[in-house]
Length: 358
Image 1 (cartoon, rainbow, N blue to C red):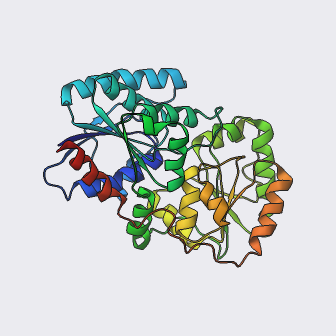
Image 2 (image 1 turned 45 degrees about the horizontal axis):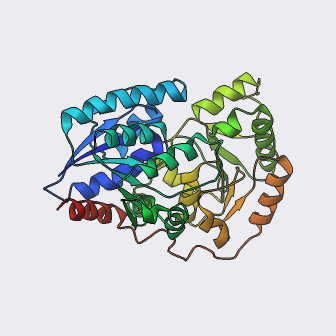
C-alpha cells in the first residue's frame, strides 16, 4: 500500500511524525512525503524534520508568501502532477491549511482516496480560512479520522451518515506526540524565569487587526507586571508589531524566536499557564496539565471548555485580565479525563487504511 502524505505547516509536521513512525512498523506500507512549503523559515520547518526524525520529504514544493488563492492554486497544480506520477492508494492530509485542501482536491479529482486526519472540527466561524478548508476537505474525504466524539457529532449533524465515507474516532495524534516526546524535551537556548506564562499569537484575525493586536499585547504587558510572559513570536506577528511601531526594546514581554517542538514541550512542562490563539496549543496545554486562556471568540476544542481547562477569552483587554485573575487562583484538577484517546491514534489510522484497502 502506498500513501502520499501532504504537509506544509508546523502543526502538521508534529502530526505527521506520529503517523510516519506508525507507518515504519508496517513493512508493507510505503510513504511518500510532499512538503508544500507553507512554513519555510528554518525554525518553522526544517528543524522539525531533524528534531522529530521525520523522513526527509520526497518532494518540496516551496510554495509560500502568496495570497490564499495563489498558494492553493499552485499547490493544487503541483500536487496533481505528483499524484499522477506516484499513483498512491491513499492521500493523507492533516488539519485545515491551504495544503490540506489542495491535497484533498487534487486527489479526489483523480479518484484517489483521501484520509483526513483531525476531521470533524468546527469553529462555526466562516471568517476563518481554516474553517473553510476543513469543511471542504471533510466533504471530499473517504475516511475521516476524528480526534474526539464531538467531532463525530459535528459530522453527523452535517449529514455525513448519508455520504459514502467512513467516520472513526481514532483519538488525537497530538496526544500520541505528547506522550512520546514528553521525555525528549529540549531546554531552549534562552533563560527562563522560574514561573512564567507561555503565550503564542499568530492567527490572522488577531494579527491583521491593529485594534485586536494592540489590545492583546497590552493585556499581556499588564500581566507581565505580575508574572513573566514568554512569547515565541511568529514571523507574521513580529512584522505586524513592527508596522505598529511596537517598542521591542522597552517591552516587559520576553519575545523569543520561534522554537522547535521539543523546546515547546519544555516550555509547556515548565510554564504556569498558557495564553494562545493556536488550536493545537490549547490541547497541548491540557496534555501537560496547564490551564489555557484562548485569545479567540470560539474554539474547535469545546470539550476543553466544558472540562474547565480552557476559558474562551477573546481579544479584549479587560476580558483577558479578568480571566487571567480567575485562572491564577484555580486549584481544581480538571486534567484526569482521557479526552483524546490512549496514545495509539497513529497505529489505529494505518490499520484502518489497511483494512479498507484489503
